[in-house]
Length: 117
Image (cartoon, rainbow, N blue to C red; front, side):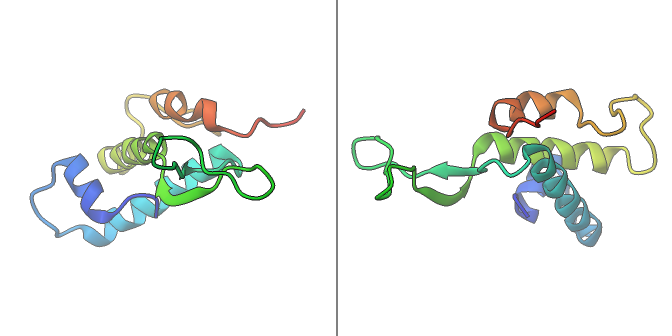
């Protein structure tokens, strides 16, 4: 899960915890949808030194933390919101088969590993 149950509950402004199991399922589904969209692109924040510069490994590649990028967390929370609000259908026609809703792709587009034709 790329966000916690607590983060999702706060995002949805839920008062109770009666549907925690359902919300947890939606968090897993939203996390999977976001990871599938990213196509293997790194979704973790890069490590910075005391001066705010990237920490590099011996090969010159950035070292990453275990913290999920804020854009990715926001995208997952938005997707959880769509799944939570539209449990049975897509009455506002926000989805197209094979695509995420536009606000989510707007957050993730620059992070995505491009597909090859």
